[in-house]
Length: 232
Image (tube, rainbow, N blue to C red; front, side, top):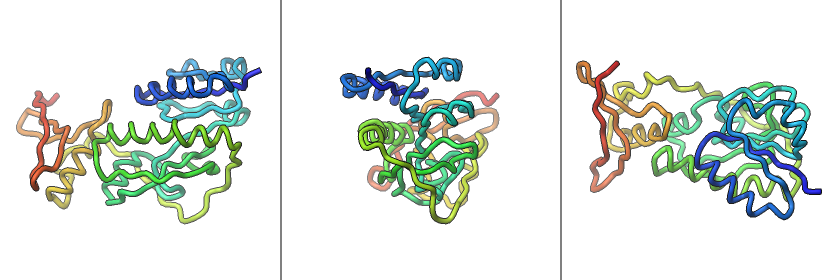
């Protein structure tokens, strides 16, 4: 009988990679996709009885009864224990850290404090937030998850100095909050906020809101797109 694996995620790039992974592993494992919080119930998980539950991106609280009874693994875009907390990509870029890790950790009661399965190097020096998340998804589905499954990796406790990140607020997307304005800093600011469902970089002009996105550096100048709307 095939062992079961659950992937719980909400982002389209992860969902696309799920189906690729399912094809790759279909001879050995039965894969199940969960995309909303109602599907992640203990009763449903108990029926599936998975060997692993992976959370490449999940927007809701993971019930304690699930992660205490089933091996549950999430992924964080920092070299833990550095960067525990919210908005890791934006905090890394703000701190000028462009070479980071994708860390696979065991789900725990406290945020990002779980034991570590493995880490992989990850470059965030270029590209929009969406492109970076898509690259992270490719790394997670094509390397991290297969390695954990096939090698039966045993997680180890986190070691090192703990550095906490704060989740960013929508108001922090206002370009006026940028202290040191330069071409490179503005490029980083705009691109790190450029992903679906994230508050894009913006400026306010009287009752108008100007959002900026799809930015590139070309010949020492910034090029990109903008959208103007009435500020509500």
